[in-house]
Length: 415
Ligand SMILES: Cc1cc2nc3c(=O)[nH]c(=O)nc-3n(C[C@H](O)[C@H](O)[C@H](O)COP(=O)(O)OP(=O)(O)OC[C@H]3O[C@@H](n4cnc5c(N)ncnc54)[C@H](O)[C@@H]3O)c2cc1C
Image (cartoon, rainbow, N blue to C red; front, side, top):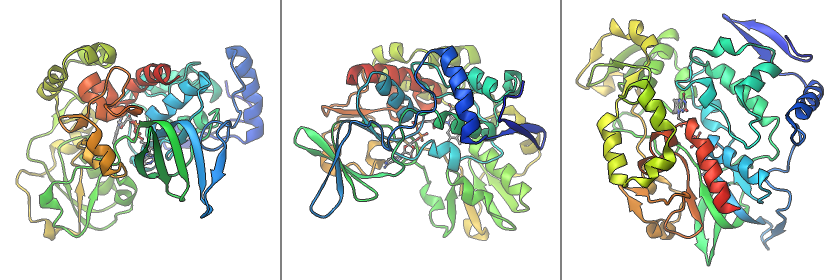
């Protein structure tokens, strides 16, 4: 049934629901709140996080905020943690651009690899389930049984955001250092934050991998910068990489009338999962981060390396099978643009806003911060979430599915 205030319009083969105005949302929200039995859905909090955080000003006029917890990053990990802390009434400040990867760094034609049930923002009241999203938007879950289009996922994010009980501060942390027993962060707008504890949940943006042989070209675009790639037209483009991002880049560039060539040393492996494991086993491993943390990191790391694979979802098989692939790098200067779909390498040293004096104190394993079962690093009060913790908690930390576990465990430790 179509809910009041929701308008369906046709876009390609999909029905897309247009966001209704605030009035209709409030109406819907009240009904659902009562049914679910939790706080008003559409309450809008103060920017940054908790309303109990009071600012003061420095002589130069910039604002200084003091907070018990600073969360850096507003992706699935930072946002889920924010919701769990909010439910525990732990004051916090959240700085980062809301779901930036999903809004600004994925191709519009992309489909998620994870299914809708594991691609959610987590909160203790389960208010962001796809079941509720489908109900509110008057559509059926069956539509998303296959892979979820990112356009629908972005609508889901907008829907979630309208219900957030707090608002992230939409900017970046430019530097973070220790100040006695606390931490001092400087934000993009010059404001400062003094925090007792800090959670780093900055995701993938600091870890783009660019092979040195490509950097000789004057115009190399990493596949993370999807908007720039989507804007290319009538260019000679070399796409480098053997994984999903390479396949998506090739499809997008060809559709836009570019002359595209592909360089990948190894032939494509068509498989639905990003690890070379049978799906039931992979699903099981994704659900056991706590158990994996009890194993020595060396075992988890070795296991991951053993089964890691660069795979492409089978829906690209037809398009890529007939395509000419260079197995040796062609002269890159023959191309107007090189698209580096060469993935991500996670290393603590790439977190450039961490002051070197702080970074030096963090004990590492294989270049990544060593964390205990509460995601705490060797520096008291400093925690890490997300892909950088993969060697300790397993592959779920690279995907949205791990964010619920991480938020639950860490919010308990921070409360
Ligand atoms: C192309 C692509 C497709 C993917 N597909 C899937 C999929 O289908 N399913 C799945 O589960 N996972 C997928 N992933 C993995 C994805 O990384 C995770 O799902 C998830 O987004 C990770 O969440 P995160 O919170 O750790 O980081 P991110 O989502 O990367 O968010 C990082 C946050 O940190 C903020 N930030 C960065 N630097 C700073 C700073 N200095 N100061 C303040 N804030 C900062 C950003 O603004 C952003 O808010 C995909 C990844 C890519 C690149």
